[in-house]
Structure formats: C-alpha cells, structure tokens
Amino acid sequence: QVQLVESGGGLVQAGGSLRLSCAASGSIFTIAAMGWYRQAPGKQRELVAAIPSGGSTNYADSVKGRFTISRDNAKNTVYLQMNNLKPEDTAVYYCNAVQIGARNYWGQGTQVTVSS
Image (cartoon, rainbow, N blue to C red; front, side):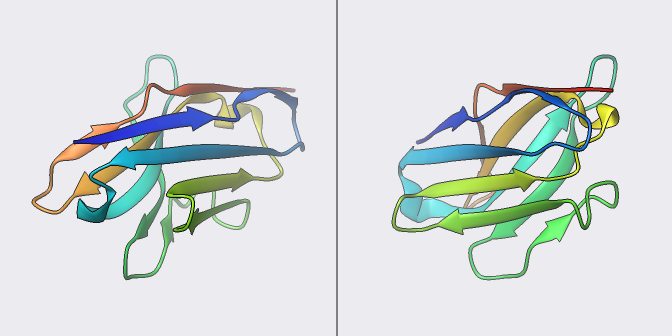
C-alpha cells in the first residue's frame, strides 16, 4: 500500500506561481513512477507531468515551459512547480503513484484556482 498526501494548492492571480507537494509513505520502494494529474469541472482527468523512477520527465503540451516536476527521494516527496499560471490551469490536482505491477494510487486532491 502507498499513501499520498498533497499540499500547496490555493488561489493565485494569472501569471503567478504555486508549488504543489506530494508526500508518499508506505511501500514506497515499490513505486515505479509518480506524477500529477488534474481535473477541471466537466472535464476528464488529464496527465500534467510524470517522473519515472529511472527515466526522464514528461509533460502535457499545455504546461511545457511553465511547470516543472521534481522529486526528493530523501523526503519521499514529489513537487510540481507551476509558473506563469493561466485561468485554464484551474482544476483539482491529484498526485499519482504507479506501483510495480501497474497498480495506481491517488492523493485526495488539492484545488488550484487561477483568477484572471
């Protein structure tokens, strides 16, 4: 089992920045990759950024150049630095962990609201 706890959401004006954090606990040695997804009202959940344990990061086209995903293995934490935020970035952001064997775990979600 893997537990994920997110923090760092909030309300920000367009052009501003936020940093999301996701602390993992439990069977962390079984995690193959971690990432961030988001879901806006009336839309499907979509991948924002992912960071595999041994590979390179990948990003949704809509956030490339603005968002950066990183991980601190000593703290078992993944971060999402979001710069130059736009109103269309408004959504609930979810931390995701993929376990070896492809089982998915999700955090509780954190709201990000960008005002114009």
